[in-house]
Length: 80
Image (cartoon, rainbow, N blue to C red):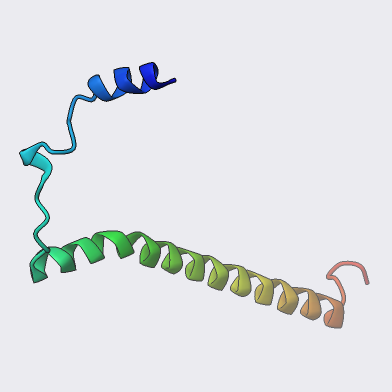
């Protein structure tokens, strides 16, 4: 097992101590804000879509209820 692990570690194309990937500085304010917008934009759009779909379903249900109650109160035309 240790032979396989040694082979995998030797085959690592980017070692952990590579200076190109050692940037550990904190993000400045603009970059942090842009990152937060990227992370939360999908949630906001999804939430808006769900709310619009719920509103459309409620409106359709209200139209159906009003239509059926009107039809039952007046009787169906032509069945008279």
